[in-house]
Image 1: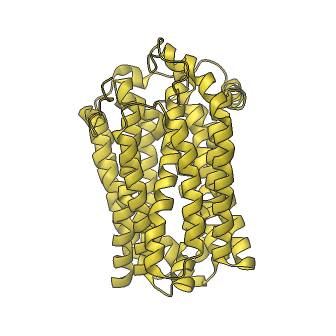
Image 2: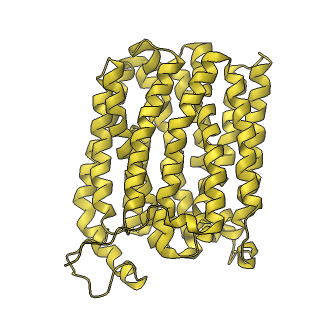
Length: 430
């Protein structure tokens, strides 16, 4: 028996529209991560409060939780390309507003919170549109998993570069210059979107009934289809309990490791390096088969790495542990995205990816707020530690559910040609 053929690592880039998107978004996301680290550091510098770090995270992401079901309906009924152009322009203006206020030296925490809410509203529409639009940029369905993995590598690559640049800019000048660089970086992705050649079908309305009925249909699908419901519940758990460590990172850099913005940049870069390795692993896989086991292992790996990081009090050990957590988180989230994209009906894609955005980004503000409150009571390290343990428990629960999920997904993959009809019944569908 011959070994499975290794698929080209960058095969999705042969599609022109996706190649444009990948190049433009790569530049823009570096700017986004520069702004994220600058915002956290600015708030912590102004207040010294771990609680306010949690509140900032809450304000930036709670709109996704509240608006995602509605935005999913709009994405399914509208031109996704035009939605993305609009959201990128609005995001550029939001970063520009941050830059003007910060460079003028008049920015307040209240203004930061208000602009975070504004960006959160933009992201509530941008995220499901971006995820659903991938299928329109990649004509061959077999390249879809690779495109999703490359998207993840693009995000994580920016996590390595962005925080490092942000730390240098903050130390050399101020947070305001970080925001200005981010605003300028949006030009790249806007230009790439405008340069795309899309078929006429991309501009047709996808509306089939009332918006309320389409919303109900999406809720029924996600809540009633066990594989989708299970992977989304696990993602929501990981995002709520595990991801607040990012929001608390300035406190770790300052209080626990006794560093400054450079230390924060190093920590974020270490996590991003692990995530990039995880994304490259997914991009090199030839198909989606076996991703269920990857989700289970990655979730528990993320939890263990996070718990160990919480107990570290030295920079070198923290830098060794964070790549483990970053890699586990990336494999878990990107694999969930891939499975959802390959099992969902096309007419429901926008709505399902909106629920993905809710589970991934929308639940994070609750976790950030709770983490900020808990950290003020029991300390930052113990807050991160218990979040890691919760992720380990979630991975164990998913492992127990995996045989049932494989049995339910198998007929879908056979119908769509992902899994041969004559495949061994014991072979994993996911």
